[in-house]
Length: 75
Image (cartoon, rainbow, N blue to C red; front, top):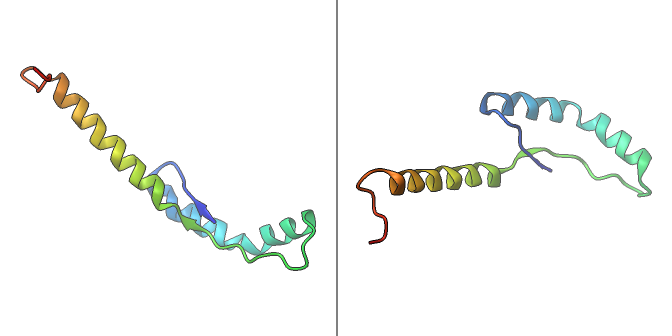
């Protein structure tokens, strides 16, 4: 299961907490769904969020360059 946490420094702590609670979460999930076997829960940081943040940063820089005096305004 992919997860992400706002705040770079909190990511690893949150991931460790989720991994530590995975057996309990799996047990609760198993009592709520009708399945013979409940899948093992594994948590990983979602790489797509970091990529999206990087794209947003690049777009902000491009907008800032276009708005700057003497920037490329397409003329």
